[in-house]
Length: 219
Length: 261
Image 1 (cartoon, each protein chain N blue to C red):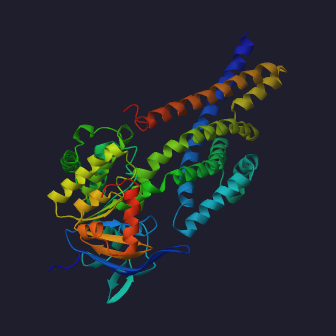
Image 2 (cartoon, each protein chain N blue to C red; image 1 turned 60 degrees about the vertical axis):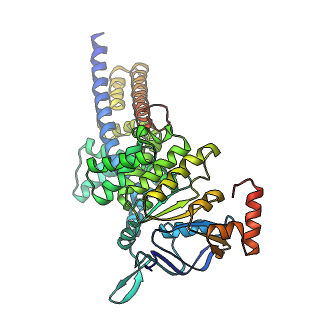
């Protein structure tokens, strides 16, 4: 029994690494999503081209390969990353590429009449984006951002392949030491699921808070 | 005799192969209340949208308050206006839309104060004081903290009028501002406009299907058809004694459809 509690300790440590990766990866993904999403809507060709290249590249290649690149190939260019840095970078850039399209789509979904009201009130392009378009678009983005964050959480499992001691890595350790697969992998199954539930729940309550007053029911 | 505040000179505008405006010229005097009427697709709304810089013109010139709208003079040459010039010109003009276009995520008073604070750097306290005066004028003070979704169409439109007025434009454009309203809400908006016309010397251009209101409100009525002004004159002349066949036909149809003249 004491042996098992030691193994649970390992898995909990792994859970902390997974949570850390998910949070940091999500922050990077969010930044990249807005940079690339707004870049794709830019008036300037160069920005549009850069954003499109980024999105297509990171959506079009495997996150597994991206991670190995970040960890094993970048050192040849003189950039050595810790497993955690490489993990955050690969996850953030990969999921950010998907989320960039969410940003673009949400901004596009705001009706032309809102832009026209901004023009009639003489707001500058950036003022209109900042004060009128983005706050409304954010509400459209949120549910899909929730999806993206859950995808990111699940994708963190690949970092076990570059020896970062996340949930999946620790489950493998327990499995190899005990010869038991059922217990460790059932445990992390439940933990991943609970973490995903937490994300959905958080995003949904954020959504409710932001939508307040928009439906005319509450202020 | 003062100079016209709007001088439109031979402008044309096409959407694809459809020519909405065809070499149109017209002038508006300062303080004048002008009603633009005509069948849909006749180009009357397009004129307002062009004046608000929501559509560009294909050719021709427009002068607003003594300055070119879509052109700017640099070293004696006439160049296409850049964004800065357009922003300067937009200060002279305000617009109210058929569908209100309020900002749904901002409460009523924030809708009104936003543009003065952002575009003119008015401090919040001053902007709010002015906003409350304007909301009072349109009878919406008690809804200052309400969200747009809590308002009726007529209330939304009155807020939209206050929002446009907050920037103190010299010219106000009203684009079918009562067309999207339930019939019983039309009057509350028209009353605000009557008050506005009586209390200010703003130049007002009005695209409308409310012929009765156009008759009482306007100093001059322009009847549009197929991108041209077919007939213009004092409201009585146009509504009681239209000379052109097309004007007569249009008015007959409008009356048959139940609109008051």
